[in-house]
Length: 108
Image 1 (cartoon, rainbow, N blue to C red):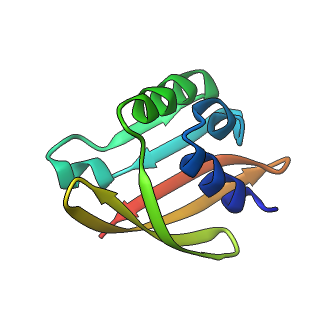
Image 2: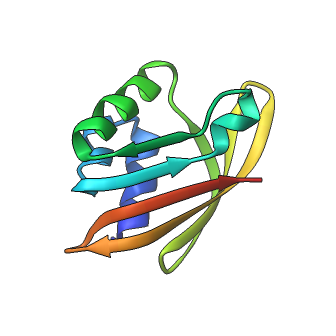
């Protein structure tokens, strides 16, 4: 199972610890999807910052993802939030020692 398959599995499971464990100690995560809900984009660096963020996100109801298609280091998926569905593109920009060094999400 590759990194993105595990990433999606952990998102679906709502496991913030396992999701954060896919990143390097100084891994970077950027997600502009929150702007679709009127919030600021999320930009975090370091597993110590990612884990509480993911845990908090899942504690608030998590993410409903569907229609996942993975191609190498990129994936496309749908995110459902309340009555809205967004198409997301996630890309591992940098990988190091089979962990995510930099990951970016663009929501369309």
